Image 1 (cartoon, one colour):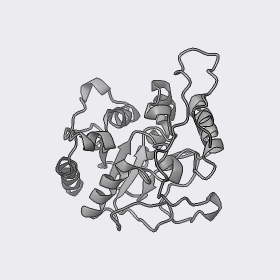
Image 2 (cartoon, one colour):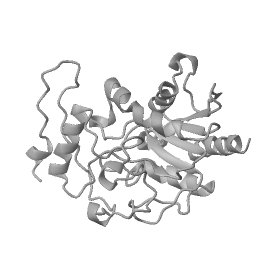
Image 3 (cartoon, one colour):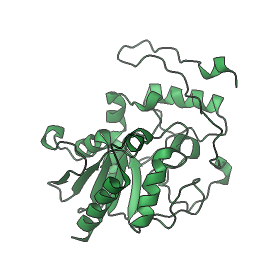
Length: 261
C-alpha cells in the first residue's frame, strides 16, 4: 500500500455537524495477530450472534462509521472491518463496557480488546480473577472462554481517531440497552472510561450528572445494578502511570466482591 493511499480521506458529507474527513490509520509495525477469515468462523466462539437486537453485524446506522469501515476493508482486506459483537458469557454477572473497537485491534480481529495493547492487561486480569481460561487473547477462534463475565462496547464500530461523535454514541446505545435488559438485575457493570460510564447510565435512563465518573467510583443504581468505574486500560493510560496494574486489579477485586453480595 502506498503512502498516498494510506492518507486517503473521505469526502465530507453535505450535512453539517459531522467531523472533518479523517484518513485510515497506518499500522506502525507488522501485526502478529492471527487473522481468521469470515468463512472459518466457529459457532461457539463466545461472540454474541447477529440477532438484530443486542448486535447487528450489518448495521450501517452511522454514515461516518460505515464509510470508515468501507474504506478500511479496501485498504486492509484481511481485516474484519465490521461491527464487533459482545464477547463472553451470555449469563454474565459482570459486564465490562469499553469505548469502541480499535482499528488495528478488535476491528482487525473481530473480538473486543483482541489484537491491541489495551487487551493485554484486560485479559491478564480477567484470567487472574477466574473469569478467563487463558491470560491472552490472540484471535476470535483461539479457544479463549470467559465465564461469569462479558465484554461489550458503547460503540460497536471503530471510529476515526478512536473518537465517536455524540450522535454515534446515542445511535448505538439501543444495542447496549437491549443487552443490559437481558442481564441479571444485580449485574455489575464495569465501565472502562467515561464514555462507557455515561453509556451505561443513558441506557438505564439515568442522569449522567447524578453519577460522576472516577477511577474506583462505585454506585448502586435504582434498578439493582452496580456500576463501578476504571480508567481505560489503554496504552496511554498504562504507559503514563495513570492506570497501574494494581489499580486495575483493585477494581476487579471490588467488582468480584460485589458479585458475591
